[in-house]
Picture 1 (cartoon, one colour):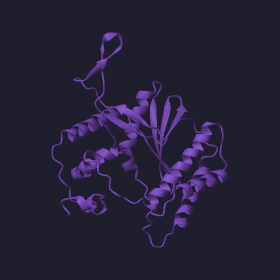
Picture 2: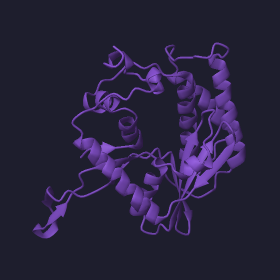
Picture 3: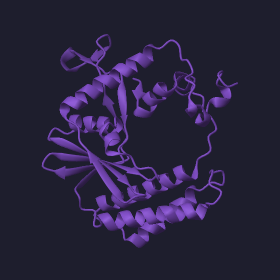
Picture 4: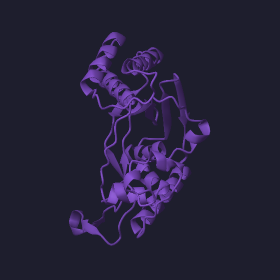
Length: 268
């Protein structure tokens, strides 16, 4: 059963040839990890540790949280990590991550905003049922099985009570999205669709973005009608991708940042 994600669909939208290289030919380019991506991953790791301990009824002190952050930074660090800005050093970025965690900690302690249901989830949302493919069900009947699924990777899933669930996402970069962009975000919206289907008591899902570099929390909501439209749209895009026979290159300014530029016929 093929599993899709917004990044996979977006790759096809950006450039069908890039999609072919990555998902059909499965070419793995050698891409250096940037310091910005490394910093974001370590902040994610540390917040996951914080909420994992909270799930065990333990609130980590800020001192221990920062100690963990430095430990995981050192453990994961590699000298090949790319620092583009010549006026910045590894220590500058390390301190920035520490600052973000300190600000986040102060804003949310004692972290009693609801019940923690999942951290860095690894789930799948079935998108459709294949009428031509069946498997035996109970009592000798036949049960339809899905053809396509959507990857569900939620940073933090919360039960806020009274049928309200929350999908939390951490953004550690310097850029902060507009409310308009968040209201059009497809990824967390698809996650909320999975939450609604998984939890029978769910009445609504709050989508929450934490822009940790800016100490800013933003939210968005989706109606059941909007989610049904989005699911149909995503499924239609997937079927278009699956039916594609040709994968032409789409030459844009983004080519300069494409990891496949050296093997793309438009550039070689």
